[in-house]
Structures are given as structure tokens and as C-alpha cells.
Image 1 (tube, helix red, strand yellow):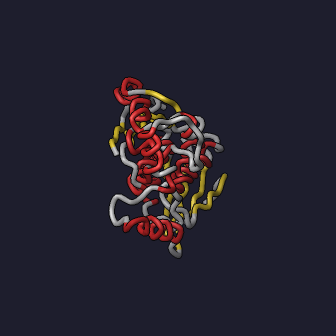
Image 2 (image 1 turned 90 degrees about the vertical axis):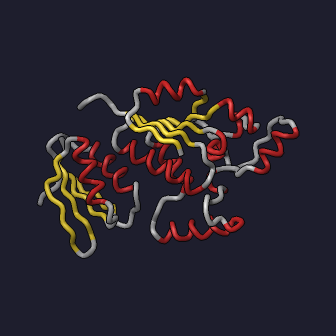
Length: 75
Length: 159
């Protein structure tokens, strides 16, 4: 999937993935897509809830070799 | 989007673990675009202390309090398993291994995210803490200012 911006949050612990995601999201325009990679197991629920709260759209998330990957479209 | 939501936290405790929980929630709430206030009172005030010795005029009791309380967040003990100071060393080691942010870093991050750090002036007087001993760029207020933030808040915690 194509992304406009990539955030590598691998190895970071709570709350940093969310804090960094918000920072990266701020640099995007509405409709653009942010791709996030993280190894924090709580991120599936965290990022899904965070995206929903801000009205952003979680396009896809998957797990590959213990890395969680997310694509979020900015509202 | 709707009006900005608010999170207010009363930080009463001065234990490394409890203060850490408060600052993680605060930083998380800021990432949720909440307007966040941490109101530090009693032992929670020590989280705002500078780690160096600041020369200020104090009475005997205030000096004693100053000496016995942790000078800054990094010197706090744990609420459980403190083991006379060995507990914090162990947990900091484990935190490093798991890439968790240290408490001083969390406080710095909170300031970067424009979280409002408030020191309760009444308890500052009780514990003999003066503005010069606390971090820069914090606010000073009492219960009314805290309630003004909390009454139209969405999340309110006492830690």
C-alpha cells in the first residue's frame, strides 16, 4: 500500500508510538496516508482507538515478523 | 472536529512508579489532542523539583523537609519493593531493556507537548518548597484553578 509518510516506531514503548504518530499525522494533509511500524503489542488497540477518536481511517493493519504495520488515512 | 477535550490529573503521590503512570497517561492524553493539566500537590510536588541544590532562605523545618524529600523525579523511590533504594535501580534497568522512557524524559516530553504543569502553592508552603527550586515554565495555582479545569474536563484522575 502506498503511503505519503512513514513512521518507524519499532522498539518504542508506550506511550511513544501514539505520541510520535500524532506528531507525524500533524505534518500530513487531509486524505494522505501514514504508514507506521511498531513492535509494541498494545499498538493494535491503541492506534485503532486513537484513529477512531480523531476521525481518521484505519485502512489496514497486519503483522509481519513481529512487526505491526498500520496504514492510517488522515481525516 | 468537536471542541477540544480536557484531561486533568491530580498528582498527590511522590513515588517513581505512580508519577510515571501519571505522566504516561498525561502524554497519551496529549497525543489524543486533549488539553492536559497535571496538578501537583503534596509529595507529587517533588516531581517538579530541580535536581540541583538551589540556595534559598528557609527555616529549620523547611530545610529538614527539603533534605528528606527526593530532589527531582529521578530520585524518587518505588511505592512497592523499594528495598531501601535498590528497587528503583532495578526498575530503571528493566525499563532501559524494554525501551520505556525514563521519568525525567516523560516530564520533558510533557512540557514539549504543552501539558500544563501546575504546582499547588498551599502545599508548597507546607513542604517549604519555593518557586526557585521547581522547574521553569510551570504554573502556580490553588484548588479553584484546578476545579476550573476539572469541572468541564472529560478525564479526571487522582494519583
